[in-house]
Length: 289
Image (cartoon, rainbow, N blue to C red; front, top):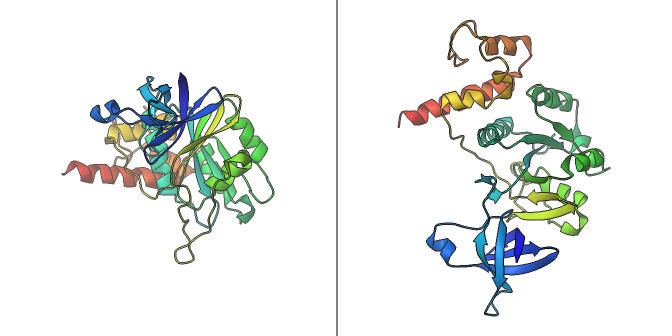
């Protein structure tokens, strides 16, 4: 039989085989090969010979793509989630993730939750990423605002939710897929950051050929590329390619830089440019070692 891995926890995998969900173990050959099944994988399964599981995963079909963090495969796009407030958006983390998706060739969109807490800043948040070329959505779990528009965007695709803890990914999953019954949590009073409620990655069906992957929150990410790759990972920079005075301009100390001029005009968000500078500095620092 062939099926899709929808959940993996403690060495067991739930595999959806045409509507029948089987509890499976992975054959030892995967360990020997240094391979591990991932949520989102298409797998070949066979009936188990013992009572430990219903079936065994005996082979994995070729992956279209693979993410390391979160560890999933065969996704059509990533929906990066930040709250308007409580917790405040971590824009550098968001920009790091957008760069990572650009480097892997996986489309990304952005969602701001807790729209009801907007004090006027949401319009700026939307503008800085829409001008960069990313689809931006906002929702309110309290009144359902924005949910239907988002549902339409998710239709027919496998989308992974990613972002820090406390921004409402599990609450959103419950709204889009009530049978998910994901645990939700409150913010820590000490640091106003989210408490981890999702401890594993799980795939939920939203309708025909529409899947949503809820993943554990994270607070750090390292961009792995060189400076040339980093420049190409900012879509708003790519649109100005060839317009700088110097060929190979790094958009930092060079004069007559089209990117810096666009930042001064407000055509590129200053926060995006500062994220680029910080990532470039970190890449240069790592290169020393």
